Image 1 (cartoon, rainbow, N blue to C red):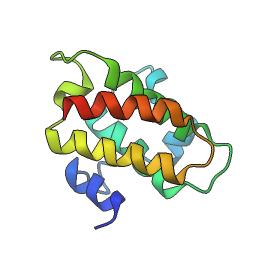
Image 2: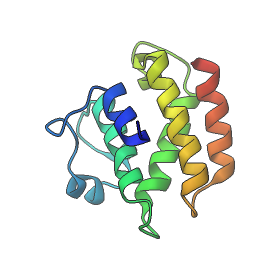
Image 3: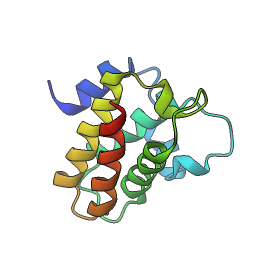
Image 4: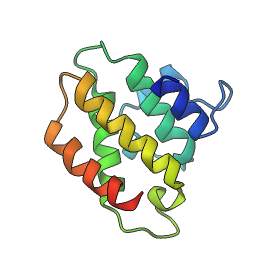
Length: 124
């Protein structure tokens, strides 16, 4: 099973629940979305967008998604954090995605990915 299918299955996403490409392009940094959002849908949707659009040079969605995952990875677990809502399997999928980014995205902060992976691996 490819990484996109694993993320879709692991976060129980369907075509109806995925966030649209147009929305993601207009809101390239999910940390700055003004309305209240369901991170359990938005974050994996952004991850999938990055996988589907890996060859688009210069897009900020990939960098911003990696930064958001790094921020969530650093957060202490609490009832309100995205990390605390993720199952062990979902945390492993985030690690898989970050590892994929490190290999497949040419223009990304590799050091940030490595630090983020350490945080997510500690919690999974």
